Image 1 (cartoon, helix red, strand yellow):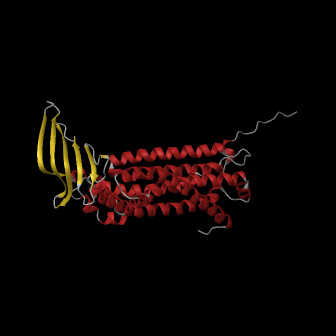
Image 2 (image 1 turned 45 degrees about the horizontal axis):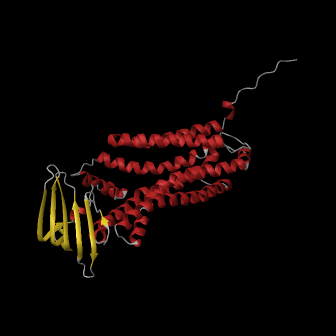
Image 3 (image 1 turned 180 degrees about the vertical axis):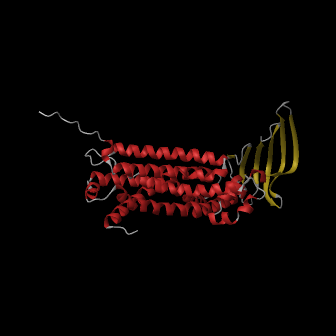
Length: 378
C-alpha cells in the first residue's frame, strides 16, 4: 500500500505526538508503580540498585497498558488540530473521502498494534519471569528482611521482630519475636542473643538464653518456658512464589503454544484457559488499532467550525468508554467460560463497527440534515 505525501505527513504527525503522549503517560504510571516498590523494597532493607532493577522490570507491563490510550489521545489531538487549522477541509476538498483519509490513521494503528503485540507476547512475559525470579531471591534474603537493628519489623502477617543491636560478627543482641499467626495461642520469644543460620532445611534463628511465653487465647493462661538455646524456623516468613498461573504469565506465546500439554498436566489450567490467555494478549494489542481509528473517525463528522469539534471529541471518548466496558464484560465472561475465548475479540469488533459507521456518516453529511423548507410562491 503506497503512501502519498499527505499520508506520510499525517502519519509522521501521529507518530510524533504518540511518542510524546506515550512518554508522559508511562512516566505517570511508572511513578505510581515506583512509589509502591520504594515503600516495599526500601522498607525491607534493599538497596537503591534493587529498587531501580525492579522498576525497570515493571516497565514493559506499564508500557503495554499505556500504548492504546496514548494512541487514542494522539489521534484525537492531531485530527482536532488539522480540523481547526482547516488542513483537513482542504484535503477533503481535493476529493479525499473519509475512508481515504483514514488510511494513514489505519497504518498508524497497525504500527502501534505491532509494537504492543511484541510487548504482550514477548517482552512482558520475559520481564515478568525475571521480576518474579528476583522477587523470590529478595524474599530468600532473610538478612535484608530481619537484620535491621532498632526497628520493629513485620516480615509477614502475624510476625513481629525486634533486634536491639547487631555486632560486627553477626551476633544479634536482645531479640524479641512475636508469633500470633495461630488462632488458638500466641507465642512471644525473647533472648539475650541470637544467630541467623542457614541449614539444609532452610534458614534458622538460633536464640540463646531466652524464654518463650505462650498465651492460650481461649483460657487466657500464660505458659512461660525458659531455654538455653532454641532454633526457630524463619523459612515460613518467605512467601510462596510458585504458582502455575504466574508461570503461564512468565512464558512467551511461542513457548506456551509448544507446551500446552505440559502446562495443563497436573494443574488447574485447561487448554481452553491457556488459549484464552493467548487470545487476551492479542486482543489487548488490537485495542491500539481501535483507539487510533476512534480518535479520528468521530471528528470527521463535525466538519469545520471556528469553535472546534469538542462535541465530536466527547463522542469519541464516550465510544472508547463503551469499548472498555465491553472489554471488561468479555474478559469476565471468558474467564468463567474459557471454551468461548474468541469472545475476547468482541471489543475490537464493536470498536471497528463504530469506526465504519462514523466514516460512512462523515461521507454523507446530508443524512442528518433537515431538508430546507419550501417557500411559497409570491
